[in-house]
Image 1 (spheres, rainbow, N blue to C red):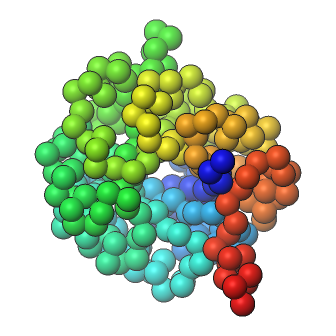
Image 2 (cartoon, rainbow, N blue to C red):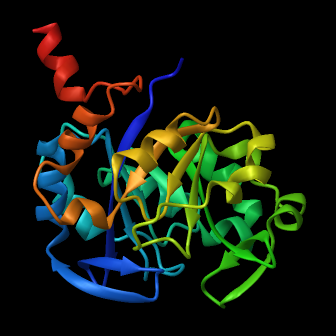
Length: 256
């Protein structure tokens, strides 16, 4: 069985880390570099930094350069503003190991082949914001607040062969405590791409249940990690039934 991951999410708006609630209401947390540094020390398997107000203007290279100076032992994934191969390459050169693509999937899918050629398919993750409407999963275009049935969006999409994983977001659950509605992912399993599940995780039972699903490779945890130190480490201690991936620092120490 493939080892599962616990990823930590840091949401950034106006260059400040925020607590996000349904990507509509925000509470300030402060300097994102401090949060990232703490999550690195506490044993996250990966850190996902999402700059949610970049639009198509390109990645926040200044933030990435500041994060790079921390010399993290934890893989850093960045999303926000990436719309061209040049954007993607600049983000990787500034310190991101992997990239999350969102608006470009709908606005400019013809760019995906060139983006993958620039940084490699394995570096690319497709972000898929979802919400349930009339008991069906709908893909949400947050930039113009429109949506369409997920299956219709997938049928008209041309990006699947250029990414390696899916960041599946339950927008209605994000920022809450009930965890994501995993039925939203049903139409995604046919893509046969690992799913990173995101949206309202607050306890180990929710995470354990979702990570036992065959198509789910990771749980992405946001607000819940802001309430106590060592939140990731404590979760791992409780999730002993799962084959969790060792943190990179543990692998380094075992080699030494």
